[in-house]
Amino acid sequence: LVSVARELFEKLQRRWNVAWDASGAIGRRYRRADEVGTPYCITVDFDTIEKEGRTVTIRDRDTTEQIRIPMDDVADYLSERIDGY
Image 1 (cartoon, rainbow, N blue to C red):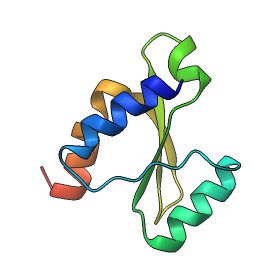
Image 2: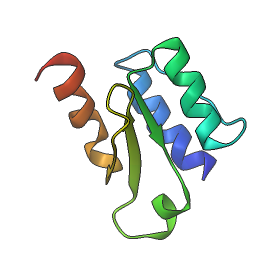
Image 3: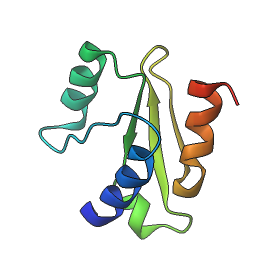
Image 4: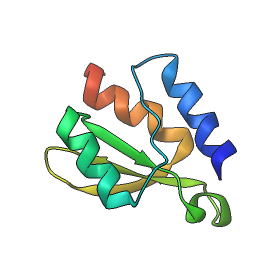
């Protein structure tokens, strides 16, 4: 689980400022991220490694909407929303 998350973290780190948080319950992590203004949180969980498609959850800070998308699509998803293309 950690190695899969680390792989995505390092990929995104090449393009954006990203932070790693593995402490506490997911709800507390979301609250901490909201407090510091993190626009998107990405969660790698057991569904990511156990189910076909290696999907992750992305949570939007402003809407609190959560969607699952394939790991391979995360950079494009964020690029559209952060960079506008």
